[in-house]
Length: 268
Length: 364
Figure 1 (cartoon, rainbow over the protein chains, first blue to last red):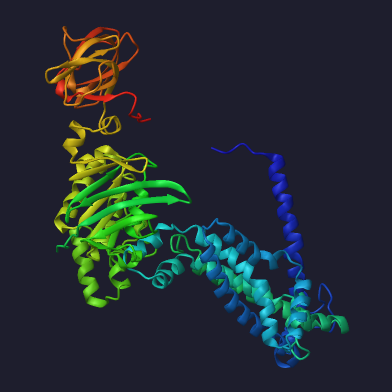
Figure 2: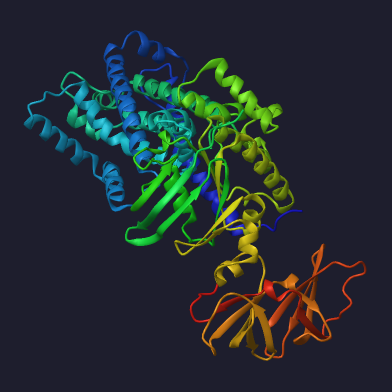
């Protein structure tokens, strides 16, 4: 038996879907297509095709690779630290409704709504007042602040699904709180922690405002370096970098999707 | 495999949540190896008491003692008090064997020792075949067996069962009650079963503590509570009961003569004494009423409920009071039709309860 069709509703869904394709997918495809040009300028469609700019990128672009490495380092540190902090905060706050918990939650979330530019500026001023010189580490600190709220939200969603009686039960069986955290809580919120870490990494890797403020003159992150290249000359290698990032993102998503979200396996 | 059960003493325990009292000066003792039920309606404080005994929070006043030693300062993890939760709270990511072995491993045991104990427990609860299953792959009854095995595996001194049968369907419930009772008795552990279901309490427990509004109404074995309830609350909460209002005429030997509104004079043997003219509530169990052409209760049959082993007949008195009568089922059904006139007599007046109307609050 077929459901009666709701024509206006279906039409709206189709239009929204088409808009998403046009705005999100098409530009990405255009950039990827342009990166495979054989010419020296960014143009669409390319007149002749080659992978020469990818070759160029990996063999003859030390500055781009250095900025990519800096971005990866910062993102790695920011991901590790924000995942650890965000997970602990989310687990501690899960299911609590007292005033202090609600206030803390709002406080931890504030970097999400606070303008990142002001946040970066504020951090810059505080660091210089404290006499701390800018480095990769100060940049990573800024990224931790930006990324942690995402982790907290992801882990909270998973932690709220957990039956609180499980922890009471573990305690009654003689488990210390730390033992229960590692054997019960962590396995059950794993999907939230992994998604949180991925979002934290993605947030860090292409974050611009805080990086502009907090990077020292010698450390340039990838997005900032790409912007600098685009400003001076329309280098096709910028498109090649985009191609690499899109490919890597798709690959990670496919792997994570397989591993994490197979029905029945991910901890409820 | 026997665990030495311990004597549990609840000594003048009171608890208040942010100033709202939940338990008021509760004291009782559970002898080692005994199975005691904490029975009461929701909100009576029974779950609060369970969580205090388990050590999940601390009572405002009073003391919990095991074998005469206070455990108030011990955290839950050090109390050696096992719990079977209402929805079993099995760890969903661990298989049956890992669930049962969790407590032993958490306490530092490893390897073959844990495995041997897990195997023993699973055999005890007849779940050995399911050792590798995840909880989601088990039925309700199987999950309960695993929860019990997990609680008993660490040889607790006391086991608490929180509404353990409420999630099971009725057909399975009685079987599991029989099984769990025999497992608890076999293991020798001291057990407390928290329930709002009086049938469950009556069928499982050696002794029942009836709680109402944070206070103990009565402590006794199932027969005492059923036959000699000390308050109208206990009388109406445990089993079914008919309630009629009357007025005391006076004492006649071993009995009180009571004028029941719209029925007339009935005599109820009791030791209790009230001033003449006192408003009284008289209770009579449905199985203590019989059709009798000379009986004092004259009414009209309203409906007949054939429940299987008994037929329940509802009889409405001219005053509007409805009485339930339960008769052992006779082949061919009940001989009355709805609308027929019927007179009832009390089979054994000593089984009636008498309470002063003013002082006892009634069960909703």
